[in-house]
Length: 117
Ligand code: FES
Image (cartoon, rainbow, N blue to C red):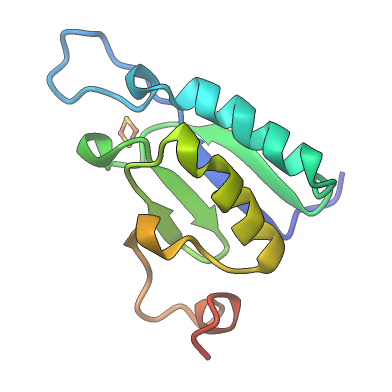
């Protein structure tokens, strides 16, 4: 399988319930990831874009967290209600601005991809 144009890495880290940091899995990220994969499949773009699980993105208190590569944008507080918009943004080569927690200041690939050129 060739390298995809863009990836959404969804944090599926799970901690013990008593851990005060909490975790994205406890907030439903595993199910969100399944539905996000389904949304990309429904658009027929699974060969260009991929959603996959990853471990902690160090935004536990802001989770569910997603790292968008190669834009280097990080999304936070993502819910299942955001899935269709995230999938549409992949297809449109944009980002979902209202979910952006962090974006790089000096990434040369970011301006064109994010429509900020
Ligand atoms: S547990 Fe998801 S960002 Fe840390």
